[in-house]
Image (cartoon, rainbow, N blue to C red):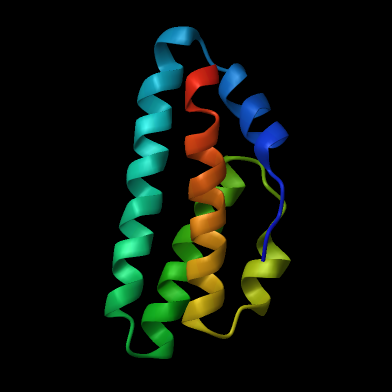
Length: 97
């Protein structure tokens, strides 16, 4: 699932002062890396749903309308792909912050 969220990410970060952008950016990257690492530990639906909930919370905080896409995920691979996609787009805008 490749969704272009780069403009939404820019809008989110530019809504904060320059002093707040980098700490928010670092926290976001850390959370996305954490989700990525936890995907290796998923061995049941409860853990998958917990990670989906965590990713959904991040997306809501960023004002990304991805609830339905996340809700429709049924496999770890789908979650992994979306988390990687978001992480890649976040890291791509680092120089702009």
